[in-house]
Length: 308
Image 1 (cartoon, one colour):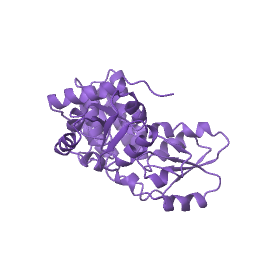
Image 2: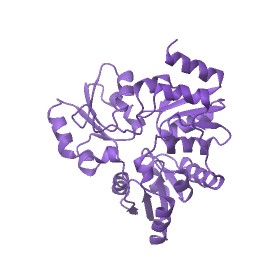
Image 3: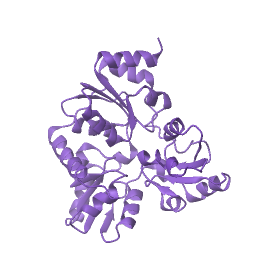
Image 4: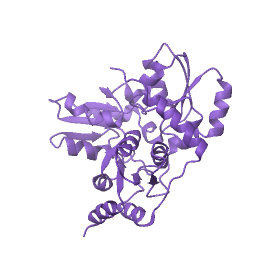
């Protein structure tokens, strides 16, 4: 029996659902019941009758799954799966910024800890950040923690006064427009797709700026295009190739994704997933006050209609 088969058998025995983010190793994505972005996976877990959630992602994602599914056990297969962006803002830092901007509504990206979400007025994803900011009655916004996403959102909603916190995803921020231009120049007639966590000079070169989930639908919008340059973490290529085997996908950094490679997303292995199912490793717990506050911020986000 292969380890893939062992994991699927264990999941059935334990009434577990396995979730894998689009940035995970291909073999981890392939063993999962569902793949997708962090919030989408947490919401998917709400629809299942599973007692156990095995979240193959990073810590803040497993926390969000616990916040939205408090009655279920949530496991993070590798305890080392952190996130530099989530770590860039702490509760103490956010409280300091809130004191600095007391009249501002706090919009927090889901790539953050439950403790930070609990101190926020509302959450957002990269897919709905513009809709969320636009929906708010006040004109003064404090956007946390990603400065690149926040700057891009501010451009889309010029009627709002958006103050942006100085956090960053280093995997997206490392990419420069000059590097992407080299890839474009050596890749004929390619459609360029970029995540809004990328820097401004990278986004300026993109044909499409969208979340990882939206990226999976981009090739369908360009039926005659054969090649796509993708500016996000290299794990997304696996799902793109599965869905569009007749297309070519090129990572934007020009070195086979060696820089657009998140070490935290890649710490989880099939052995970790198997061990999690066998030994309940590692259970994620969220303090009650943080759980209540974070859930409130997430539910407010979910109530916002998406822009057309």
